[in-house]
Each structure stands twice: as C-alpha cells, then as structure tokens.
Length: 287
Ligand code: 9J3
Image 1: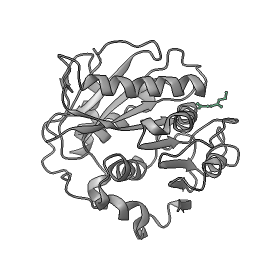
Image 2: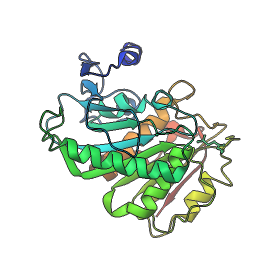
Image 3: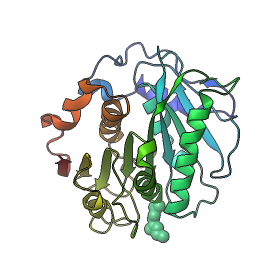
Image 4: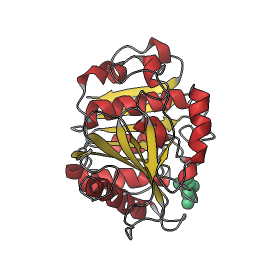
C-alpha cells in the first residue's frame, strides 16, 4: 500500500487530483503509535495549484486531506538552494494524509537566500489562511487559520529559522531540516522548533548550522534537536532520504503536538524511544 501511494503521488497534476482513496489499511488518525506514523495516514489526499499567485514565491502545490472531519492546520514548506518542489514534495502527501493542509513551494529563483525563503514561507502561510475564505477553493472553510507551521530544507530551513525568529506570533510550530543559515539572529524564536539534522552533513555541517541554530534558539523556547547518526544533507528529501519513515514520524508528531495541540502525541517526542535508540547521534530536548 505504501509503495502504491508513493508511486501514485508522482502523478500530481496542476488541477485537482485525488491521489489516494484506498488507505483503509493504513493507520487511522486516532492511532498514535509508531507504526501508524511511519507511513501515510488514513486520509485520502488531493492536491491543486490553481490558487491566486503571490509575489513572494513561484509555483506551488497544496496537498490536503479530502475526508478530514474538521478544519486542519496549515504547513508551508520550502526547498533548499537550487532545489525545486520535487526535492521535498514527499512531505506534502505524507503530512496531508495525517490531517494537514500542506503548501510546497518553488522559490522565485532557485538561488534565493534564506531571508527570501523566509518571506516565501510567510507568504505561503497567508495563502493557506486565505484559502479558507476563497470562494471556489477546495479548502474553503476547512483551514484552521490559527494553526500554521513552517518547514524547509537547507536554505529553506534557514528560511524557517528566520521566519520563526521574526514571526513566531503567526506560527505554532517550525521544523527546519538539515538547515543552512550562517548568520541569522535567532533570538526571536519563540515557536516550538524541531531541528532535524544529520551528523555527517558536509554541506551544512551541524557545528556551524543545525546544532548552532538549536543553541541560538532561546532556552525559554520549546525545542528539540534530532541528529540522525551518519545522516547527510538529504535525509529528509524525497528521493535521497534513507529513512523517511523516521524523519516523517517525528515531523508528524511535532505538528500533531504543537500545531494541533494534541497531547496524545507527546510521548512520541518526549517518551522512551527504544525503537530509535540506535538511529540518533544526538536527541536533545528543551525544556
Ligand atoms: O540550501 C542548501 O542546500 C545550502 C547549500 C549551500 O551550501 O549553500 C552555499 C551557498
């Protein structure tokens, strides 16, 4: 089932496309167990890209759960330097199938720097909010505009950190994965932030990037540093990620806990992790 789902997501089209309709055997959204979060969730996923354009980013795709019973939170995701949506697009259907509206964007210029990616992410958050009220939107009346999160890879993760530092009041969760950003002031980050890193990332070395970012986020902020042992710069990317189940599970759990405020997922972040014990070189929580 999972492979079928993944294969079918390759056919995402510009118009409304139902990607998955038969995930009955996948975990339900009431199942907070590890196995359920290692794969696609119970909701059928559709996508579209014909929403009003904004100046801050280029093309983009919104993935959403067709059959979620109530309003869902929104997640904006930016790729890294020279990357396109496809590099990170697996997050779209994965998160949507667990009950989120997910906008995956192309930056205006694939060489845009992290500060431009921060602006793109915040514009994407505004788009997701606007979709809730736009006549004709598949998400009309279906987005909880108070629940917004940002994610991104590498310079997109740098954009996440900058956006979180400047706009924490507009966000409920942030997840930079293998983030790259050498100089930003992160003292304004107040939103719960999960930093996903790889110990062997040679493009954004953790000492200069992810681990430094984690430590720059104020101690008064809820934050977790997850470092995959031996992980490289692409551990959370569509085709190169070697264990997407694991990074996906932590991403879903973080969003469930802090975007949705669903306490059932707290143990997946803060509880015992025998399942993962050998996978992480560092797993640091604060507080
Ligand atoms: O977004 C990224 O993958 C950053 C990679 C990088 O080395 O940028 C240096 C300009």
